[in-house]
Length: 254
Image (tube, rainbow, N blue to C red; front, side, top):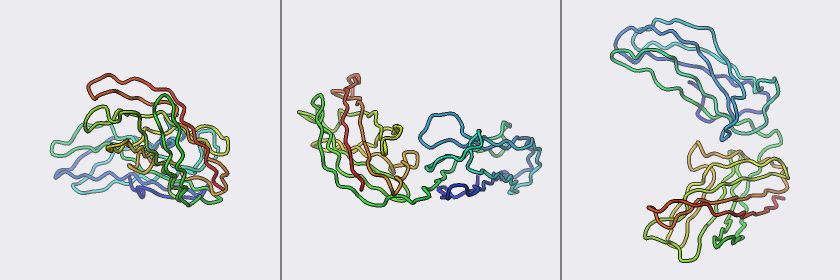
């Protein structure tokens, strides 16, 4: 699929996508397929927001020949409504076809598309450095980085007698959400965890493309960040158990 790995558009701008099949074998190859793309909200497990299916095609390709199919997404969902700003995943379904003798058919690829906030995104770093202790686990929200691309959140987490074992962290994952100006909660993926001698640093956003968080609108007044619960264990060989929070932080953005 040809589209910048991360493309940015203003609301309503058409998103152009090309599916490109290349015969990477040394022999002619015939393929029957139905080209189709799917759009989903990044980090969201909700159903597909939009899909487009082309007419069934049969193509006969020579070695190194490319077959191109064009798609346009108008940024609307299946109900014809404009999708809200944020990151979206555009993926294509690979064809169901036998493998060539001396080549292969690749898996479906994807690209991330950012629908930008019309008012712009907030760009600044907020030093928070506030701590909350619940059930003997202390979370210090260190800072929040806001850019036109995304939000990143850094926290330092520890507990008494940390660490329970040498060169391991007791923390496995964290159920986390945030709200902007009292809106609906946004569920976050599990953070990246950086083990340190006196605690574990949690980082949400930006460590991998799959973990990218939406940028924050420039006119936002307050961010509420909440860790709901954590999965911990006393050693790598012991079963995990849940420690309930919440560890909640209210961050003014004005």
